Image 1 (tube, rainbow, N blue to C red):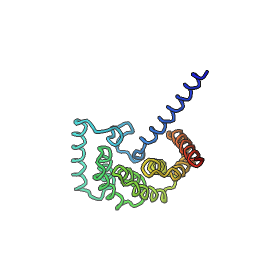
Image 2: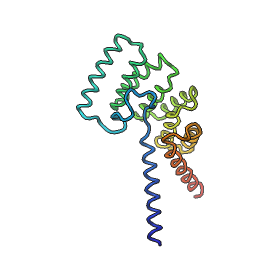
Image 3: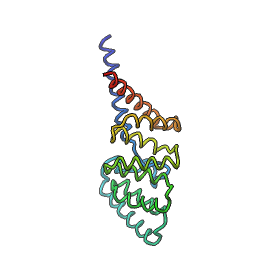
Length: 200
């Protein structure tokens, strides 16, 4: 009986650890603002792109840059360039084009979330949070902004109480979203950690 109970406990621990790991991997560009389908390669999430893929990316960048030269205030072209640099793991270049988009469309919340993700990748988490807060003043229920804010507070800023608040707002607005179960699990874990710490 003890052996069986130990096995159950071990399984629970493994599931909890996996859930904590998985939720940290999910800071991604909002689906509504993707140039590529959701299953497209992403260096931001999956490591360096193969050289053959990078060759096609460089060619696409060259094409888009030529198009932007001819139409420099076209937000769709600028977003496309920013998104390519995002996926290629080139945050400085992505931010450059996202800034140009925001100068033309200052209330483009998807682009704000994209830029915030790139700021986070550069170690500029406080700036990322400020930008996500700005996006949420425009669209309080923005799914990816709320989700990413929780991840950044928890992972980068080690501010669990703020992470919990962000994720609870996320669940209020998106209770049936694909990431909701992982968010609930992470909130439970953080609340248990907080309870244990306060009991010491």
